[in-house]
Structure formats: C-alpha cells, structure tokens
Length: 72
Image 1 (cartoon, one colour):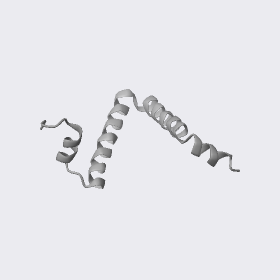
Image 2 (cartoon, helix red, strand yellow):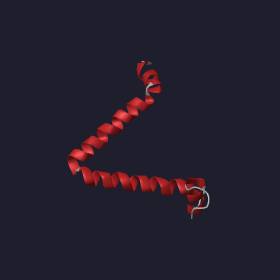
Image 3 (tube, rainbow, N blue to C red):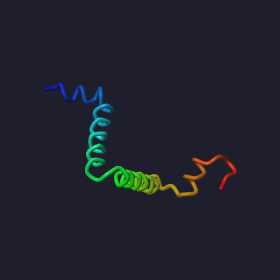
Image 4 (cartoon, rainbow, N blue to C red):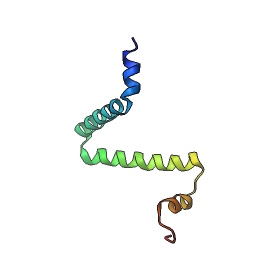
C-alpha cells in the first residue's frame, strides 16, 4: 500500500501538472479559450493581491522589487 505515497512524493510536480492540465483542458472545452484565459488571469491577480496581504507588503515595495533602480 506504499505505492501511491512513495510515487507521489517522487513525482509530485508531474502528477499535479497533469491534473492541472486536465482541469484546464476540460474548462477550455466547456467554456472556450478566452473565457478560460480570463478566469486564469483573474486568479493570478487574486494570488498576487493575496500574497501582498500575506507578506504585509505594499505595492511600492513590490514595484521596488521588480523594477530596476530609479524607475517609478
């Protein structure tokens, strides 16, 4: 009975990637490409906003982190 947990730990990225790909493929077939793209885009925006709250980081701190020095 150790087969699944051992293989999952060894191939976690492949298994989760395949499941995510399957889910996105089904969503594209059901709703269409652009609606799916919109949902994925809004999920990414939500993740970034949630990350700000989790890390107690301001927008200015984030922009300082990703932009080169002297750009604002």
